[in-house]
Image 1 (tube, one colour):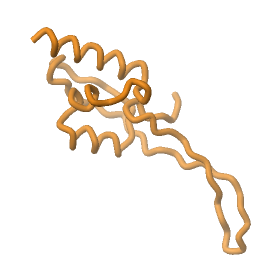
Image 2: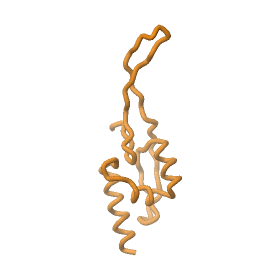
Image 3: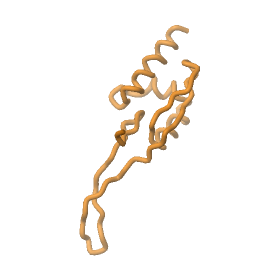
Length: 95
């Protein structure tokens, strides 16, 4: 399982630990990922995704998973999220 947010594409970053003597050693900055279950209003079911906590806040701010996926660019979404986005746009177009 990769350490990448399925909604925003946020992943591992690299940098340095810097000591008091200014010695530098490489380190990783890991994203804060959580397994979240979000409700889709148009599909009328819950969707389980591994997303960052910042993405979870963004979803709530924008007004739900459906609105977030419609506005999101396909390049930053995972395959699973793109599949849900396609299902959501079809169900909205049908109504």
